[in-house]
Image 1: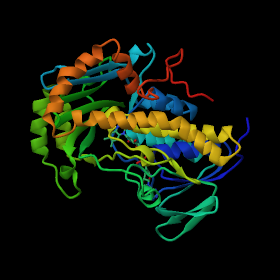
Image 2: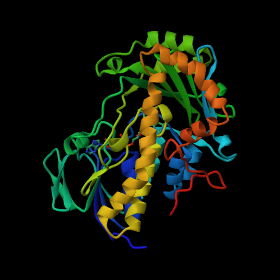
Image 3: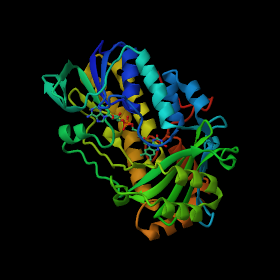
Image 4: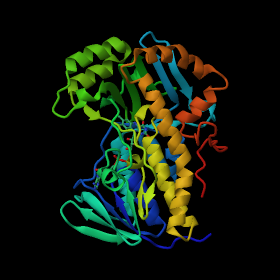
Length: 408
Ligand SMILES: Cc1cc2nc3c(=O)[nH]c(=O)nc-3n(C[C@H](O)[C@H](O)[C@H](O)COP(=O)(O)OP(=O)(O)OC[C@H]3O[C@@H](n4cnc5c(N)ncnc54)[C@H](O)[C@@H]3O)c2cc1C
């Protein structure tokens, strides 16, 4: 097998996808420079659920044991409506007895990836907001807001997240509308009710306008999510915590201990999401990965996992081809189908949980619980949760040990 040889690579963004890509490329011998707009790179966003797919990439980075030690093993997803009727009840164990997901605090995941990046040969430049990437023949130069120029690079990997400004600038044909609903979230101490085996990502829903989630993230903590329309999440608009407390207790009285903690602390963070579609992954030597390329609503809990898989697929494609354009085409062929499936599936599913369409809530409550138990459909839903789908009709399988096989 031949490879493109050592490349000069710029990576924009020190998030999940950017850090994993930078580390894997530096490990493969490429000369990598990472640009992060913040002076202190830091995680933003709620606790998240790593799937067998994302865990496989962490294993490749040598981070799986630390992640598992610090996170919480999750055996499945349990979503009930306000009448405690089952909406979704899925178990990784259906795929393989050893299969599981991992709830992890975003700060923990960030710390692990960042520590590993710092151990690699990649150079990290912080306080560098990249506002443009200028092409110069086959190469590309990154332009900082402060005026500095970096490069030229053989390849610039843009991993600046769902709200990417570089995408707007460099791929004006891309679509990235904001979802009409987002969420607030907080991380609170776990109460014993929610760490009993099997540990689940749990949800409670009422219609399509009220939804709460609880995800154990390890170290005796749980991330609590609450759905809100985007207009209520605007910066400067305050959250009526007492009204929230009453609504949350009414929806999910058994979670009172965590609701009270979150209300007392009153330090909710806010998140909005975009439905991102790019006409292509790259424009010459400029490649988009992670949420910048395929942000979705987090309804299926896949975004970070998809970003980790992008990073791995990129390093693999570069190792397997002696031509950069051919390597990027091979990357696109590998990542296109699963990413398209998860974008479409998240987009289809989201209004059943977050919208002003009450009929969809009724349809969801009437059908999804039944669908989850239907012999033909349950495997598809479980493989969707586990990140294994390659499309509507095909999925990858776990290996004999219940792990996702990444390939070489
Ligand atoms: C509420 C919520 C829950 C979620 N739950 C899950 C889950 O359970 N499982 C899951 O897999 N995913 C989940 N996700 C999705 C997941 O968080 C994202 O898919 C993932 O963080 C995307 O990683 P990224 O590296 O592409 O982007 P980001 O993590 O957004 O990182 C982008 C980085 O780029 C930097 N940056 C931005 N612009 C510039 C610039 N111009 N110059 C330099 N640096 C720049 C930013 O500061 C940041 O460090 C959730 C998302 C939300 C909002």
